[in-house]
Length: 127
Image (cartoon, rainbow, N blue to C red; front, side, top):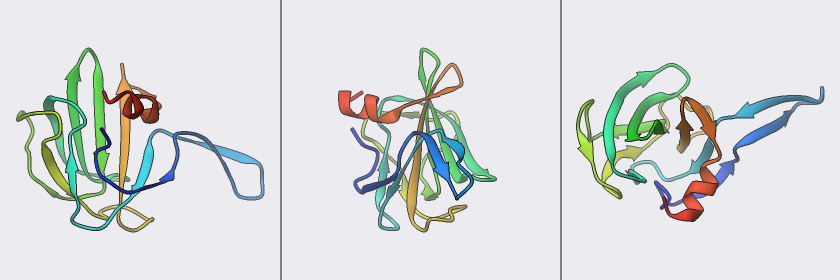
């Protein structure tokens, strides 16, 4: 399940930047959304972090067990707090543009043992 409906505007992985053939590594995807759109947890878990973080704006991190974590950045309103349990598909926040230079979007990451993994592989499987 995708955390919020919208168009994927930035993909996971290496991205060529500028005219200098330099590359950056995108740790997640960016989904263009309408401000205020409900953001849902892609899988059950426990809120590990729900606060502002430089570069991510309002950020929520969910611990899903087995050293898997999801990150939801640039959200506007946060509905869950650290320590709360969430269900798959539960609304955890609203989409926004906090800390974003792309306007209203959701930055979404999946990490395993702290390493970013391609969220598209997980979203296609339906978690």
